[in-house]
Length: 404
Image (cartoon, rainbow, N blue to C red; front, side, top):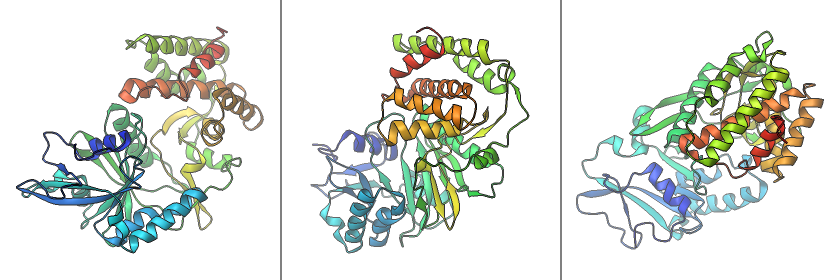
């Protein structure tokens, strides 16, 4: 049996993303053994919570304070049920119950440079002393990327690190750093600053500063932050015709002349181009405001601390996007993800919001085209199809393109 034994696929994928095994200097020590190979030293230990088969979190075992902090910090952002479970586990780890869980042990050669481990690499580039990290274990998904909570051994929060490991996720991690840097000053909200952006081997790494320790999650998903805040983020331009905009040119360039990888790829590209053609014919001459959007404006990326909004996860942000699409994204994702509604219900929520909140029914088609282009972009970047959106988006594109 290998070092991970009966570990689930999500844990195996995470290990490959954070510790390159097989031919690498870094090795995993089997739990049944506990001893590193000759010439190696144990560098890191993690508790696998709750166990290898159902792994949900890797907890650093360097110190009890760090282990506890990895589960208790920012617990108020989580749903009540999950908050209670993590609270009990965090207190147990503070009391020294880490040994009750199976362990993932990482070993490196005794003369390994600091860059051999991501944790020591991050400590070096951040100019700090030793640091440890906790990380969630997600189901196997080529679109997801590890997000590490960084701590000092004493449990002080240092920041968040996102790790891009394939073309799609490397682009997202790089885009987050660039987007945060490009944001205009915001009086009504705080955005965690970029502490580091760079590479670690073939990985792309962006580290942002920690959120306030007492940040609270957005309470009412049916009431998004005010539209004025989106306008401050956008800093919109004077209206220009859609078809003459940099945004439309970018969409057209992205979808033109793409060599399909397979039949699904070809069908999606054809449907997207047909929908773009029809929107250009019917709405291309209308003037629109364009500016920056957050790109993933959802309740779980917004919090509050001392009455001030906290905004994070800017990896999908872009400039020169039609104003108002963030609001439509909020309505779409609340229906689809938070409420578990089918895609047609989420699309109906988008159209309702475009009519009654933006006073701009045509914005709904632009948002749905944007989400379709994103879905296709991630797939072509190695992320695969999002099963919540594909193939269902083909019907939406056919409706926009007038082929149904």
